[in-house]
Length: 533
Image 1 (cartoon, rainbow, N blue to C red):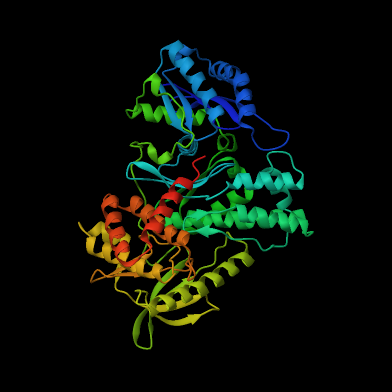
Image 2 (image 1 turned 180 degrees about the horizontal axis):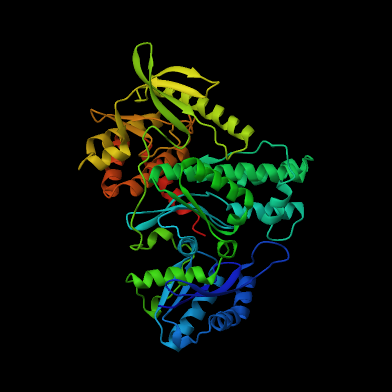
């Protein structure tokens, strides 16, 4: 089967042709704004002027005629409306002229599938980093799920903005990478991670201020890369431990950065898993990725009529059925998390567990030490305040700041993630958990990384909270909404009964927190805010 794909979500108009084994051709032309950024109407005009040439070029390079093509695919979204419409119109025209079926493809899905095709990855967790997108994506229960992403600007957007301030032409990322190699001083910047989500606007604002104060562009670029890439790998590693995947796939325009690739390779070696780094030419937006995703969709039964071949600027990857991926993974010991290793110990005759925060060799040493110290202190503060109001946290027996270790009361049991797998019903535990979260929020305390892997369930079914290092004790409604949102998302990835279990959790939450309606309204706002761009 031969598929032709047309990509046109943003700055690139591209046509690619693939069959079931090979990429037969790929031709692209990119819009450049001399003032930086993308002007949607100008980009769309660029695409309209060039779309015929890229299609003709792709057909010529593949040595094919339209009669040889079995399927036409196009980028349905997400993206810029005027640009999307050019690609869709071209695809509909070919479909009608040649009498070929048509498929609308989700843009991030294309990045995943071309990455799998060219690298040989099977069922990876994907770090997708581009101008508009910064996402951690993983397949679960028949669909790709966005486990975490930027809450404001994409990382590529940050690099382009900073590059423009320094005086670089678009795109700024490659020049920032070059300058960063000459930087030596780590400048203090915001480290903004909320659960599995990231925020880059604060880093950009702080970097601009440092430039104005006279810090060297080399040190600013060095620091921006170290902070932002460390944030990405933190959420990626957390996602690996939540999903048990044993492959990493890196894609998107920023994925060409050699420092980021080096960090990904070091992380994968540390975890004993495979890292697949998509070749540069397929990191960027391209028609071949749309053709590949369209081919898989069509072979697995996806069909639309010509009247359904429309565009959707906020088309989500998790709206697409993906039956061609069998869920896989590995067994990760429960004594090891993304940030620490836990061992069974003894403290003054009591059976305990000791958690040691392990250094991250992929992170800058100074930054790594700062993060580990701050997280350990914060976790202890949250536990002490929570236990005072009756929230079930394991007791703390000893702290060693030199070894970055903390010794806790041992709770005999396992994670909620495994507890749900082993039982047909966990309604009582989930309801109790919702009540405790509501009580915790009533006191202004949030967990910060509330997932099914960060709740222990004792043998009697009672839930206990662990790993609260990202929590707050002076929380606002949005912080509370993040807790609920993260728990909801982790349930979707871990359980086939997620909808029922979340309803039970929310029932317990409502019963113990008077402002539950404000929190749930903010959860809905968070869902709308997420950037599928």
